[in-house]
Amino acid sequence: MRILILGGTVFLSREVARQAVARGHDVTCLARGESGPPVTGAAFVSADRDAGAAAYAELDGGWDAVIDVARKPQQVREALLALAGKSSHWSFVSSASVYAAHDKPGADESAELLAPMTAVDGVYAEPADNEYGEGKVACENLVRDLGPAKTLVTRPGLIAGPEDDSDRFGYWPARLAQERSPVLIPANAEVMTQTIDVRDLALWLVTGAEEAVTGNYNVMGPSVPFGELLTLAAAASGFHGSFRSADPQWLHEQGVAYWAGSESLPLWLPEKGYDGFSTRSTASALAAGLSLRPVEHTIRDVLGDEQDRGLHRERKSGLSAARETALLAALETL
Image (cartoon, rainbow, N blue to C red):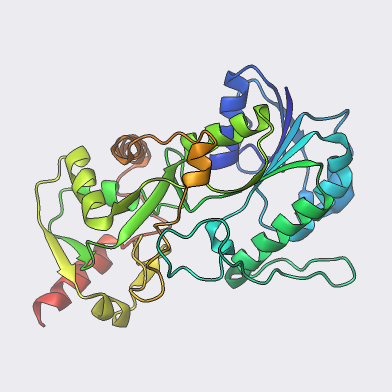
């Protein structure tokens, strides 16, 4: 097949390109090229998608499949206007953030979505950080309205694996592989996590292109309690130290961030309103061929990647050593 990947140089889109090339497809990646070179075997077109229609001027011929991971509705609109008429199948990687609520365990693709961002005179503004979900809803609508007859919308949650530069999932195996003890954790071991390995998601996208899969799908990993995830990470890293649990409300009062980002405890979420965030139904995708590896395999490979990049490097997500030490000391005074 002749496959165009809008991206192809970073994490998920790079893994999609890698797997598509490995399966013998003729792959072209269109990106700015500032994040690294394309995978070996893929053609590369350097373009800035913010340039609009001009970004696609160097692309020739038709495409059996296009795969897009964009978050900006305007980029998605311009790509569809330029390429949909030349494409047989269109895949868009959306997000579970499109859902209006996250409190219902087991919710499927029929759950209510956020109101989409809207265009002014046909032009979408760039989504702010707090408009990520609304932007993705707008992108989904554009794909359905302007795309070819066969379109696939994929809604993943947390994605993890080697080369992940968000540092969210990798924080825990990396932290447990260090010699410092105790390890500060939120006291909510029963809260669920739901992580898909980037390689499984990439395979789903490539297979979806090959088989012209259509529709909307939650594409997520197995739901695993946070405490079990820590146990698996400890086993993989050889951690034999102790954990120090802190009340979630106390952590919040100390300014420890939820989920991701600087001075956060990754994968931790507020107790109210998020009961369904990491328990969404993936029954439709599994029935359509989604294959998931055990989470311990992802932990093992992420740990190897973290060790290669440096366990003590500066991270985008997680607590710094100094901040964790200070919090542990404060806990002892309570």
